Image (cartoon, rainbow, N blue to C red):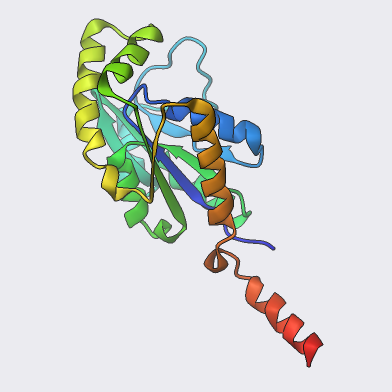
Length: 209
């Protein structure tokens, strides 16, 4: 039965595993689309315009915010990030679910938007802060200064855990992925997300008359 697409928000401190989990979800269900954010930062080696980010200058970004074309936006470490509204609304109309890798501030903005009724929000916790720091160091992407800032920011992010519909502790990537699949399956089957269900039941009742 056709339904409106979901907005699936996955948030976590940097290094807790949300990007890996989002990628695994998309491998499990290829109909999922990943929200491509706009950003004012420069492209990193290997990043492709429109695939990893929409790269734009600050005036263009500010114009989209002013004109209501950003579903959410924030400044992180001196760079602006935001979610263009148009592609998300198109996916919803086509019944396709969209994954969002945003922080708690972005999640708040999306939930407060006109699309908020279709949001499913999930927060991923690390098993411990020492393990979170170990993961940041293991991926070998950041300087010591950046790691220190990410660890400091993680405490603020974790404090917002209760604002989410679901909270998972990622101490085992396989188990956490299984939990995410279960959440998504259950949310898709909710009665209020299946507008055609009422007509189907009425047809059944007419057959029984």
